[in-house]
Image 1 (cartoon, helix red, strand yellow):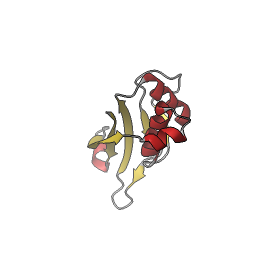
Image 2 (cartoon, helix red, strand yellow):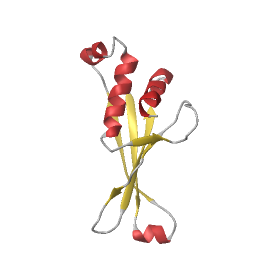
Image 3 (tube, one colour):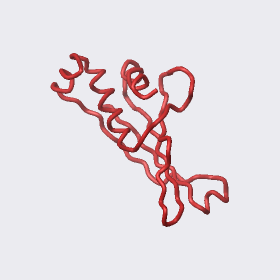
Length: 114
């Protein structure tokens, strides 16, 4: 089963003074596709899974790879702009780590994002 681990990291006024952030939440997104999804992606299950994964993480906003170099297996992604809570000044960013995705699926994800 392919899952995306989503980590929310929040910077508060207090944590900023201590030069640290707080991991405030961790969730898992299960990525599944059906026969129609595969058919929509030229019969490629890998493409269908990659597109579904990218769609799921883009709901959090624009994302970028964890490094600016070339793709490597295990690369993770993070949101570019933080979510801001204007009432208290907190800022949250999200990072996305892919579990049980094949190398091919990870390459396609990177091509779609980078």
